[in-house]
Length: 540
Image: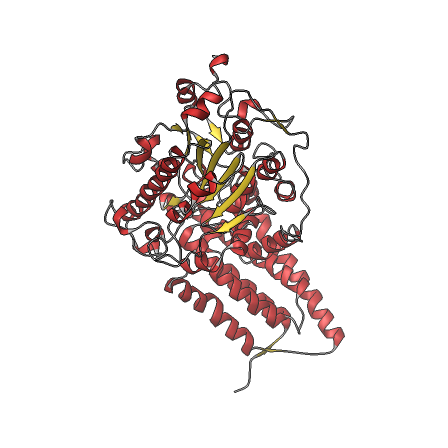
């Protein structure tokens, strides 16, 4: 059987039509939802926008492919478009630079939790079948001048399509795109290509190879006479826990019963820096923070961990996640996620109790001040049911699958809440360990990196552009526990700290609170962002 023969320009047009009609449902749906119009006007808007998108993507293809590269490029686009369409359709995600970074930094265990048979079906329909058809097509060849003429005609036709689509839809489309700029991250496969190129252009070297700019170079320690013992502070970075389901913050369920029985300060209105770990983790430990957010500057500069280590604080990172995202480069790092222990690691992923292993011993053997960071797996989805042992399956029925579309909303919430119950247990154990230490003044601060959507507004997981993200993804719990010796040495008032817990806070408070705990003085230190400042007895 002879393969079908067509010109490169025609193949690029067919591919563009396929991408628009079959792969841009999320974009066109968002377009309709943002512009409530009469039915006729709505159909016209969708039609002309589809023509515009087709012309735009056809033009891009004509500028980058030729008779030799057309097949490889289109086959590659089909294979990367398939999962993009799946996750945009099923989970409501947007393919921007941050999302591409998340994908590139995802380890095999996290990636495996995102695979199910529905993804395979999308891969066949949107990837394998189109790729096979492209492979079977025979690219027609001809004289160079004929090829140049055909390409010129194609480019002119593509520009004409753009004009035909843009002019009638301009009055509705342009204001919508200005007001909802994030919608451009739904235009497929342009979103995948552009975001990947942007991520690659901004990530020319690895964190281990990159020389970081020193921060707070004037930082020094101010040791009070009241400090008779060194300090041991534990910073617990949670994962995917949202404030809405946090028992201490007024949730209808008590998902934090153990913490409720401890003398902790729970901050009730806390904003995250980002909606994904790759953004929030470096940001919360950076002196730039969200106030002066600049991804490249944060990536290329020291974190607060480096500053503290430079002034004499021992810093150790314990990880049950996917690394410290460059914030602990050059500092002691222990990966607990591959621990061989059937009790705390029965699945490919370990429960967060693994982070408690020899924690007290590590502090007892520290010769001076020490900061230990525990990076939890928390309630990371979509495998929420694998984040806790069966003994914490308190809220039922549960969603025991990664195919969230198969679960009722309440069962999904039940499963998520069980994960928070287990986080509550782990945090209470950290406090228990710290209470038993007499060699150091101890304290703990817990904060989640970002929140999570559980189907509200048909959104799942996290990672939406911050301006678009609902509060479920941007409001997180923050809890602090300080031992009596640490409270006394800092002359802190428990009543004042409790009153301050109702004041809005954010990830920007973390850096300056740590500087306050370890008595670091620097021009970079902002007193008003230190959660303990203003609560000394002398200041009241």
